[in-house]
View 1: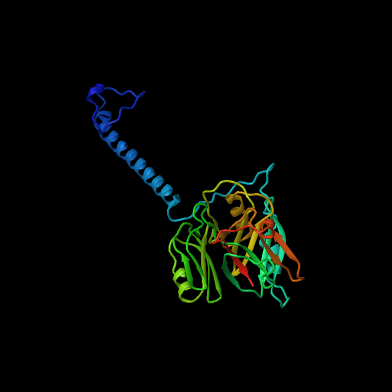
View 2: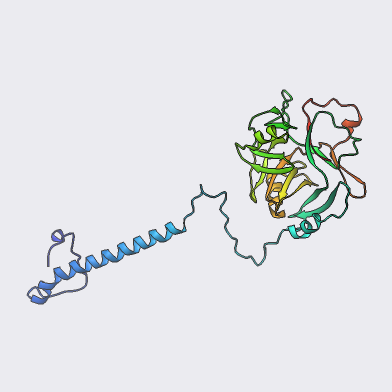
Length: 309
């Protein structure tokens, strides 16, 4: 038998098998047999490696081509996954079928994953934007809330803002937008959109805010604190507003909107900013802090509102 140093790269040594040095059969076929065996093993290994590579490549996901990767959770016996409390079906169908002719806002409460929400659905009313003074005795308003943020240092409106075709500010400080052009309301998220130019050209309105939901997908935002949250939303073409009745983070609020079934949503100024809605019975549903309006508080010049009349 050859010494260890004499083994070639195309040979293998079989342990535990002996043969007579004078056995012509073993001597003549051993080296050739070992060569073919090694080639066969190498071929099998190559096929296995290529097969595994193809399998894992076919299972991979390009994270740059999708907004999020959703991994389905396995069912748990002790902690079963509960369906969101208060789904689209519980309010959406009834909410868009108001039979009252006069302009009003339908107000309804629901609960989504322990977050109490109040939904405001305007009927027979038109959306517009308003800057500066808000007349709290204006009986034409059926819903009003603060719209775009203003800077604390200079009082300027944050992001692009258009009222009746007049551009007051420009810029993309926040990617979310809400526009009304030719009576159609658009809610979405984009760094650049021609809706700004359309609003200017056609006498419409446009403002920017934090995006919360885009194409049914949650959008994360930087602020991490908790506060009363508000938003303007769109679902199957229906536009409505949502407010939390408890202090919530941006993430939890956006998740509740996703679970509600919202297609797109952008933020409205929350916290204690004042506003109200008028229902079909003429009742006034107020939110926020009204006292600054009653006590002669001087508001910043560029305070602005989203209004339904």
